Length: 283
Image (cartoon, rainbow, N blue to C red; front, side, top):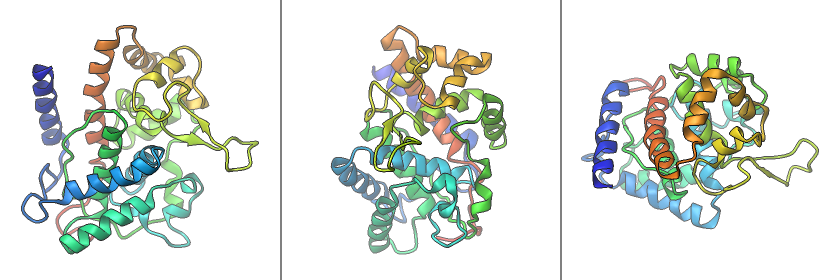
Protein backbone atom coordinates (compact mmCIF):
# COMPACT_ATOMS: atom_id res chain seq x y z
CA UNK A 1 0.00 0.00 0.00
CA UNK A 2 2.94 2.36 0.63
CA UNK A 3 4.03 1.88 -2.98
CA UNK A 4 0.50 2.59 -4.19
CA UNK A 5 0.37 5.74 -2.07
CA UNK A 6 3.67 6.90 -3.56
CA UNK A 7 2.41 6.25 -7.10
CA UNK A 8 -0.77 8.22 -6.38
CA UNK A 9 1.19 11.18 -4.98
CA UNK A 10 3.54 11.26 -7.97
CA UNK A 11 0.60 11.03 -10.38
CA UNK A 12 -1.25 13.86 -8.63
CA UNK A 13 1.87 16.04 -8.80
CA UNK A 14 2.10 15.39 -12.54
CA UNK A 15 -1.56 16.31 -12.98
CA UNK A 16 -1.11 19.60 -11.13
CA UNK A 17 1.87 20.47 -13.32
CA UNK A 18 -0.05 19.52 -16.47
CA UNK A 19 -3.30 21.29 -15.70
CA UNK A 20 -2.22 24.07 -13.35
CA UNK A 21 -2.62 27.55 -14.77
CA UNK A 22 -0.86 30.78 -13.88
CA UNK A 23 -0.07 30.92 -10.19
CA UNK A 24 -2.23 27.93 -9.24
CA UNK A 25 -0.27 25.35 -7.29
CA UNK A 26 -0.60 23.12 -4.25
CA UNK A 27 0.45 24.93 -1.12
CA UNK A 28 -0.28 28.37 -2.56
CA UNK A 29 -1.21 29.67 0.91
CA UNK A 30 1.66 28.03 2.81
CA UNK A 31 3.15 31.42 3.75
CA UNK A 32 0.21 33.80 3.39
CA UNK A 33 -2.37 31.72 5.29
CA UNK A 34 -0.78 28.49 6.55
CA UNK A 35 -3.90 27.24 8.34
CA UNK A 36 -6.24 27.82 5.39
CA UNK A 37 -6.72 24.18 4.43
CA UNK A 38 -7.16 23.00 8.01
CA UNK A 39 -9.78 25.72 8.59
CA UNK A 40 -11.75 24.57 5.55
CA UNK A 41 -11.39 20.92 6.58
CA UNK A 42 -12.63 21.49 10.13
CA UNK A 43 -15.57 23.54 8.85
CA UNK A 44 -16.64 20.89 6.35
CA UNK A 45 -16.22 18.19 9.00
CA UNK A 46 -18.40 20.13 11.46
CA UNK A 47 -21.29 20.33 9.02
CA UNK A 48 -20.74 16.81 7.66
CA UNK A 49 -21.05 15.36 11.17
CA UNK A 50 -24.46 16.98 11.51
CA UNK A 51 -25.68 16.23 7.98
CA UNK A 52 -23.66 13.78 5.81
CA UNK A 53 -25.75 14.68 2.75
CA UNK A 54 -23.96 18.04 2.66
CA UNK A 55 -20.96 16.21 1.21
CA UNK A 56 -22.89 15.67 -2.01
CA UNK A 57 -24.11 19.26 -1.91
CA UNK A 58 -20.57 20.63 -1.73
CA UNK A 59 -19.43 18.44 -4.60
CA UNK A 60 -22.30 19.60 -6.73
CA UNK A 61 -21.70 23.23 -5.79
CA UNK A 62 -18.11 23.04 -7.01
CA UNK A 63 -19.14 21.30 -10.23
CA UNK A 64 -21.84 23.85 -11.02
CA UNK A 65 -19.40 26.66 -10.32
CA UNK A 66 -16.70 25.32 -12.66
CA UNK A 67 -19.05 24.63 -15.58
CA UNK A 68 -20.27 28.24 -15.68
CA UNK A 69 -17.68 31.03 -16.05
CA UNK A 70 -14.99 28.63 -14.83
CA UNK A 71 -14.00 27.83 -11.23
CA UNK A 72 -14.38 31.37 -9.91
CA UNK A 73 -17.08 31.13 -7.20
CA UNK A 74 -19.54 33.03 -9.40
CA UNK A 75 -22.19 30.50 -8.31
CA UNK A 76 -22.07 32.08 -4.83
CA UNK A 77 -23.10 35.56 -5.99
CA UNK A 78 -26.65 36.22 -4.83
CA UNK A 79 -28.54 38.67 -7.05
CA UNK A 80 -31.84 38.48 -8.98
CA UNK A 81 -30.16 37.49 -12.26
CA UNK A 82 -27.18 35.51 -10.95
CA UNK A 83 -26.31 31.86 -11.63
CA UNK A 84 -27.60 30.99 -8.18
CA UNK A 85 -31.14 31.95 -9.26
CA UNK A 86 -31.11 29.86 -12.45
CA UNK A 87 -33.39 26.81 -12.62
CA UNK A 88 -30.55 24.21 -12.67
CA UNK A 89 -29.12 25.77 -9.51
CA UNK A 90 -32.25 26.17 -7.40
CA UNK A 91 -31.53 22.91 -5.59
CA UNK A 92 -27.94 23.77 -4.69
CA UNK A 93 -27.08 23.58 -0.99
CA UNK A 94 -24.03 24.03 1.19
CA UNK A 95 -23.67 27.79 0.86
CA UNK A 96 -23.58 28.12 4.65
CA UNK A 97 -20.50 25.87 4.81
CA UNK A 98 -18.60 28.09 2.38
CA UNK A 99 -19.77 31.26 4.15
CA UNK A 100 -18.66 29.89 7.52
CA UNK A 101 -15.23 28.88 6.22
CA UNK A 102 -14.82 32.26 4.51
CA UNK A 103 -15.65 34.13 7.73
CA UNK A 104 -13.07 32.16 9.67
CA UNK A 105 -10.44 32.65 6.97
CA UNK A 106 -11.11 36.40 6.84
CA UNK A 107 -10.55 36.55 10.60
CA UNK A 108 -7.30 34.60 10.30
CA UNK A 109 -5.98 36.00 6.99
CA UNK A 110 -8.00 38.98 5.74
CA UNK A 111 -8.31 39.29 1.97
CA UNK A 112 -6.08 36.31 1.18
CA UNK A 113 -8.09 33.14 0.47
CA UNK A 114 -10.59 33.21 -2.39
CA UNK A 115 -14.06 31.70 -2.26
CA UNK A 116 -13.19 29.77 -5.44
CA UNK A 117 -10.39 27.99 -3.58
CA UNK A 118 -12.67 27.33 -0.61
CA UNK A 119 -15.13 25.61 -2.96
CA UNK A 120 -12.36 23.42 -4.43
CA UNK A 121 -10.97 22.51 -1.00
CA UNK A 122 -14.42 21.82 0.44
CA UNK A 123 -15.23 19.48 -2.46
CA UNK A 124 -12.02 17.51 -1.81
CA UNK A 125 -12.72 17.34 1.92
CA UNK A 126 -16.32 16.22 1.29
CA UNK A 127 -15.07 13.28 -0.79
CA UNK A 128 -12.49 12.39 1.84
CA UNK A 129 -15.03 12.49 4.67
CA UNK A 130 -17.36 10.27 2.63
CA UNK A 131 -14.73 7.54 2.40
CA UNK A 132 -13.28 8.52 -0.96
CA UNK A 133 -9.73 9.50 -1.95
CA UNK A 134 -7.98 12.71 -1.02
CA UNK A 135 -5.58 14.74 -3.15
CA UNK A 136 -3.53 17.90 -3.19
CA UNK A 137 -5.73 20.74 -4.41
CA UNK A 138 -3.96 23.38 -6.52
CA UNK A 139 -4.94 26.78 -5.14
CA UNK A 140 -4.44 30.40 -6.10
CA UNK A 141 -7.73 31.02 -7.92
CA UNK A 142 -9.35 34.43 -7.76
CA UNK A 143 -13.08 35.10 -7.59
CA UNK A 144 -15.15 36.26 -10.54
CA UNK A 145 -17.30 39.38 -10.55
CA UNK A 146 -19.80 38.28 -13.22
CA UNK A 147 -22.65 35.84 -12.57
CA UNK A 148 -25.54 35.48 -15.01
CA UNK A 149 -28.36 32.96 -14.85
CA UNK A 150 -28.43 32.88 -18.65
CA UNK A 151 -24.98 31.28 -18.69
CA UNK A 152 -26.13 28.08 -16.97
CA UNK A 153 -27.35 26.41 -20.17
CA UNK A 154 -24.00 24.59 -20.45
CA UNK A 155 -24.62 22.68 -17.24
CA UNK A 156 -25.18 18.94 -17.88
CA UNK A 157 -28.84 18.02 -17.36
CA UNK A 158 -30.45 14.81 -16.04
CA UNK A 159 -32.16 14.10 -19.39
CA UNK A 160 -29.13 14.86 -21.58
CA UNK A 161 -28.11 12.26 -24.15
CA UNK A 162 -24.52 11.02 -24.05
CA UNK A 163 -23.85 13.10 -27.17
CA UNK A 164 -25.04 16.27 -25.42
CA UNK A 165 -23.12 15.42 -22.26
CA UNK A 166 -20.01 14.75 -24.35
CA UNK A 167 -20.37 18.11 -26.09
CA UNK A 168 -20.75 19.99 -22.81
CA UNK A 169 -17.76 18.28 -21.24
CA UNK A 170 -15.61 18.71 -24.36
CA UNK A 171 -16.34 22.44 -24.33
CA UNK A 172 -14.59 22.51 -20.95
CA UNK A 173 -11.61 20.47 -22.10
CA UNK A 174 -12.89 17.23 -20.58
CA UNK A 175 -13.07 13.90 -22.42
CA UNK A 176 -15.30 10.80 -22.20
CA UNK A 177 -13.19 9.34 -19.42
CA UNK A 178 -13.58 12.52 -17.37
CA UNK A 179 -17.32 12.52 -18.10
CA UNK A 180 -17.91 9.05 -16.65
CA UNK A 181 -15.49 9.57 -13.77
CA UNK A 182 -17.00 12.88 -12.71
CA UNK A 183 -20.55 11.58 -12.97
CA UNK A 184 -19.67 9.65 -9.80
CA UNK A 185 -18.84 12.90 -8.07
CA UNK A 186 -21.91 14.76 -9.31
CA UNK A 187 -24.58 12.14 -8.86
CA UNK A 188 -24.12 9.05 -6.64
CA UNK A 189 -24.32 10.95 -3.36
CA UNK A 190 -26.80 13.50 -4.67
CA UNK A 191 -30.53 13.34 -3.94
CA UNK A 192 -33.33 14.25 -6.28
CA UNK A 193 -36.84 15.47 -5.57
CA UNK A 194 -39.28 13.20 -7.45
CA UNK A 195 -41.41 14.88 -10.10
CA UNK A 196 -44.65 13.86 -8.39
CA UNK A 197 -43.34 14.53 -4.90
CA UNK A 198 -44.08 17.38 -2.53
CA UNK A 199 -40.57 18.80 -2.67
CA UNK A 200 -39.57 17.56 0.78
CA UNK A 201 -39.04 13.95 -0.25
CA UNK A 202 -35.83 12.78 -1.90
CA UNK A 203 -34.82 9.83 -3.98
CA UNK A 204 -31.28 8.50 -3.64
CA UNK A 205 -29.40 8.24 -6.92
CA UNK A 206 -27.22 5.42 -5.59
CA UNK A 207 -29.44 2.67 -4.24
CA UNK A 208 -26.65 0.78 -2.44
CA UNK A 209 -24.58 3.41 -0.65
CA UNK A 210 -26.30 6.77 -0.58
CA UNK A 211 -23.96 8.48 1.89
CA UNK A 212 -20.71 6.76 0.95
CA UNK A 213 -18.34 7.66 -1.85
CA UNK A 214 -17.73 4.42 -3.73
CA UNK A 215 -18.26 2.66 -7.06
CA UNK A 216 -21.74 1.24 -6.43
CA UNK A 217 -23.09 3.82 -8.85
CA UNK A 218 -21.24 2.21 -11.77
CA UNK A 219 -22.45 -1.25 -10.79
CA UNK A 220 -26.01 0.06 -10.75
CA UNK A 221 -25.60 1.55 -14.23
CA UNK A 222 -24.10 -1.71 -15.49
CA UNK A 223 -26.99 -3.69 -14.00
CA UNK A 224 -29.69 -1.35 -15.34
CA UNK A 225 -30.44 0.49 -12.10
CA UNK A 226 -29.31 4.00 -13.05
CA UNK A 227 -31.90 6.43 -11.68
CA UNK A 228 -31.50 9.30 -14.14
CA UNK A 229 -31.85 8.85 -17.90
CA UNK A 230 -28.41 10.38 -18.39
CA UNK A 231 -26.90 7.80 -16.01
CA UNK A 232 -28.24 4.76 -17.81
CA UNK A 233 -27.34 6.16 -21.22
CA UNK A 234 -23.68 5.89 -20.24
CA UNK A 235 -24.12 2.14 -20.68
CA UNK A 236 -25.63 2.50 -24.13
CA UNK A 237 -22.70 4.42 -25.63
CA UNK A 238 -19.71 2.28 -26.64
CA UNK A 239 -17.07 4.74 -25.45
CA UNK A 240 -18.57 5.58 -22.05
CA UNK A 241 -19.63 1.96 -21.55
CA UNK A 242 -15.99 0.84 -21.54
CA UNK A 243 -15.20 3.25 -18.71
CA UNK A 244 -18.25 2.10 -16.72
CA UNK A 245 -17.15 -1.52 -17.22
CA UNK A 246 -13.68 -0.72 -15.93
CA UNK A 247 -15.09 0.83 -12.76
CA UNK A 248 -17.85 -1.75 -12.26
CA UNK A 249 -15.62 -4.82 -12.63
CA UNK A 250 -15.83 -7.82 -10.35
CA UNK A 251 -12.39 -7.60 -8.74
CA UNK A 252 -13.11 -5.42 -5.72
CA UNK A 253 -9.52 -4.62 -4.79
CA UNK A 254 -8.43 -3.57 -8.27
CA UNK A 255 -11.69 -1.68 -8.73
CA UNK A 256 -11.11 0.51 -5.69
CA UNK A 257 -7.53 1.24 -6.67
CA UNK A 258 -8.46 2.15 -10.25
CA UNK A 259 -11.25 4.55 -9.31
CA UNK A 260 -9.40 6.13 -6.39
CA UNK A 261 -6.52 6.79 -8.79
CA UNK A 262 -8.58 8.20 -11.66
CA UNK A 263 -11.05 10.31 -9.71
CA UNK A 264 -8.53 12.79 -8.22
CA UNK A 265 -6.97 13.29 -11.66
CA UNK A 266 -10.37 14.16 -13.16
CA UNK A 267 -11.20 16.45 -10.23
CA UNK A 268 -7.96 18.39 -10.54
CA UNK A 269 -8.48 18.69 -14.29
CA UNK A 270 -12.02 20.00 -13.81
CA UNK A 271 -11.01 22.38 -11.02
CA UNK A 272 -8.68 24.28 -13.37
CA UNK A 273 -11.38 25.16 -15.92
CA UNK A 274 -11.03 28.83 -16.90
CA UNK A 275 -9.56 29.86 -13.55
CA UNK A 276 -8.76 33.48 -12.81
CA UNK A 277 -5.30 34.31 -11.47
CA UNK A 278 -2.95 37.24 -11.03
CA UNK A 279 -4.79 40.52 -11.50
CA UNK A 280 -7.99 38.89 -12.76
CA UNK A 281 -11.05 38.87 -10.55
CA UNK A 282 -10.86 39.61 -6.84
CA UNK A 283 -10.63 37.98 -3.39
